[in-house]
Image 1 (spheres, rainbow, N blue to C red):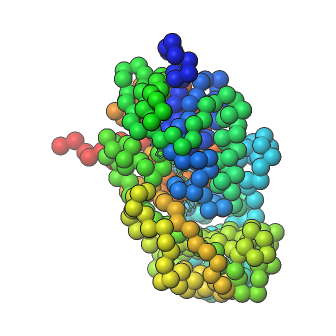
Image 2: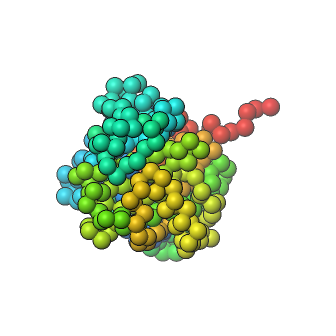
Image 3: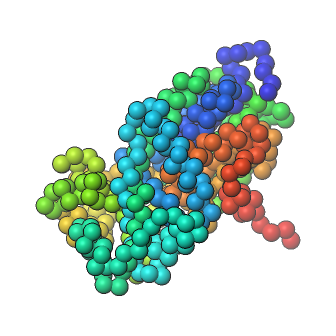
Amino acid sequence: MSRTSSPTRTYDVIVLGLGGMGSSAAWHLAERGVRVLGLEKFGPAHNRGSSHGGSRITRQSYFEGAAYVPLLLRAYELYERLEKETGLDIATLCGGVMAGLPDSRTVAGSLESARTWDLPHELLDAAEIRRRFPTLSPADDEVALYEARAGLLKPENTVTAQLRLAERAGADLHFEEPALRWEALGDHVRVETAQGTYTAGQLVICPGAWAPQILSGLSLPITIERQIMYWFQPAGGVEPYRPERHPIYIWEDSADVQIYGFPAIDGPDGGAKVAFFRKNGAPCTPETIDRTVHRHEIDAMAAQARRHLPTLPGTFLRAATCMYSTTDDEHFVIARHPGHPDAVTVACGFSGHGFKFVPVVGEILADLALRGATEHPISLFDPRRFAPPPV
Ligand SMILES: Cc1cc2nc3c(=O)[nH]c(=O)nc-3n(C[C@H](O)[C@H](O)[C@H](O)COP(=O)(O)OP(=O)(O)OC[C@H]3O[C@@H](n4cnc5c(N)ncnc54)[C@H](O)[C@@H]3O)c2cc1C
């Protein structure tokens, strides 16, 4: 790979954005022995993008599509490595309940993935759900797929672990240094910040909710959505919600409204987190997002949660906003940049379900940046799927 005479400003690869995906890319790239510069607009593991809020669901019986399963199997291995090599607490595999009517996407789609890939799972009827998990209150015709290997990931610790391993392997990580401009110039790229201009052979762009601005040339159908996470102190306390006995859950009702939630991981007074999945996300931009959570929103969350977990919305504790970057088909965008296929790689549009893939996405991005190809199955994520058909 080409190097010029200014060693302080010239790299093999620049990673733009060090959130979930970018910190992973920086880690994998640095481990492969190339000179990496990471540029991040804010501080390490910040709360202004999409990778904060204390917890994310992970699961393998994936109702969004069986094509994701091989990536999940690899992500689980890499999450284990992240924990082992940094000593940080990242994954808690407390089990997961995907509940709803038998033909709901949540149940039927999870089952299809589990059967396609022969993943360990159990099907529970309403009585069995109530018996095993007394906080859950299904209607008589609801069922659930139970997956013992599902659980939760801590996003801030994940990002911190990846940044730590990237630095340990020699990456230069610059925080509070937004990229102001990038361009691909034949066999190299140039990125400008307020501090200077950097050049490299390759650029990997992981912009999260800033994709519509930073990748405007791609005209991707991505909507940035305001999403809210809520913490409630359960009536009667957190004891029945502790991760030793309480699963993560995704619950779809007969009107297709999905909620998801977590065991109580923040101590006796920290409550348990619950949220709407995909529904109710008002379009926004990172600059205009309303960070205030309003009373009617809290009431709507409490009412929906109460239908499935009657004791959960005891007392409202707090809420926080976050952004989804949702593509029209809710599948990711991970590819060489169609306009600059020799020098630029992009990862965006994670549509509210990307975190569980974070360590494998970085591995894919390193493959694409250094070899132009990957063995991982990523054809579903090709941005050219959105191109209008030729007339
Ligand atoms: C409320 C909520 C709940 C979710 N729940 C789940 C879940 O349970 N399970 C799951 O798998 N996924 C979940 N997700 C989705 C998942 O968290 C995201 O898909 C993932 O975090 C996206 O990572 P990212 O790297 O694309 O974005 P980010 O982590 O936001 O990273 C993008 C980074 O780019 C930086 N950046 C932007 N512009 C510039 C610039 N010009 N220069 C330098 N840096 C720049 C930003 O500051 C940011 O750090 C959830 C998301 C939200 C919001």
